Length: 308
Ligand code: CP
Ligand code: NVA
Image (cartoon, rainbow, N blue to C red; front, top):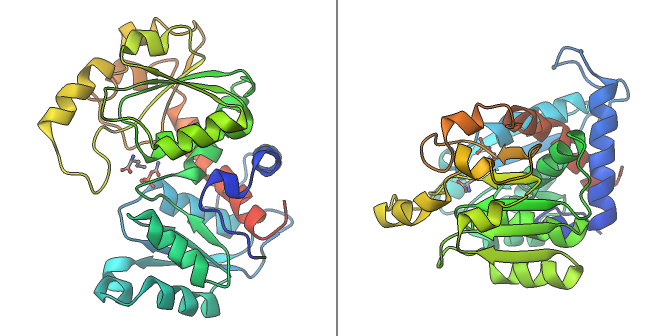
C-alpha cells in the first residue's frame, strides 16, 4: 500500500521515533559538508518530488528541495496559481497526472479535504506540507530539536501559548503518539481541533487547557507558540486582543523550568506572539528548529519510500 504522510498517525509511534533517529544519524554523517553535496549513499537516487504550493512557504519549500537533493533525487516546484489546478482542474486529475511524472507529491494547501483527495487519487506517496488542519512535517523537526537539546519525550511538559491552530493540532497528535503532556494556554474559542485532542488522550497523551497563560507555562520544559493569524485567516483586531495575554515574553519564560527551550515554527511576529527578547534570547532554539526541517524532511521522504 502506498505510504502517505497526511498526519503523524499515518506513521505512528515507532516510525516517528525511527524518523527522528534516522535524522540524527544522517545529520551527523554529513556534518560540515557543502549543503548541495548528496549524502554518500544517495538513498533516493533518481527520485523526483513534485511540490505543489497553494500557500506561501520558505522553510517547507527549501527544506524539501534540499532534502530530496541530498538524498540523490530532484524536485519540481509548482506554484498552484500558475498551474491548471489554480484554474479549476480538479485535485483528483492533478494527482493522477503528477503520479505519472513524479515519484512523490508534497502539497501545501488550505482545506485538509484537498490533501485527502490528492492521496486518494495519487498512485505515489502524498506528503502534507501544511493544511489548515495540521502540519506534521514541522512537528517531526520540532521533536528532533527537543531531543537534540537533551530532553526526552516521554513525560515532557510542553506548554503551547496562543492560537489553537494547525501546528498545535499536530503537536497534540504527537503527544498521544510519543506520550508527553501539552499544556494549552489559549483563550476560549481558539482551542485546537477536538478530534486531535480526544485521539491524543485515548493514545496516552496528556492534554490540559489553561485560560491563564501563567498556569500553562508553570514548570514547562518547552514553551511553543506560533503566529496569531495563520495563512488564509483574516487580520482580526479582536483576535489579536484576545491573544495578547498569551504572549511569550520574559515574564512568561521565567515561570517555565530554568532550562526551558523556546520553539516557534516561524515566520515569527516579534511583539505579537513572542517578544524579541525571547525569540532572540538564550533559551530560543528556533534556528536549530528551522535547520531541522531539512533533516526531518529527509526522514519523512525515506519513510514514504519504505526505507525506514
Ligand atoms: N514553518 C514553516 O512551515 O515555514 P514556511 O511557511 O516558511 O514553510
Ligand atoms: N500556523 C501557521 C504556520 C505557518 C508555518 C500558518 O498556517 O500560517
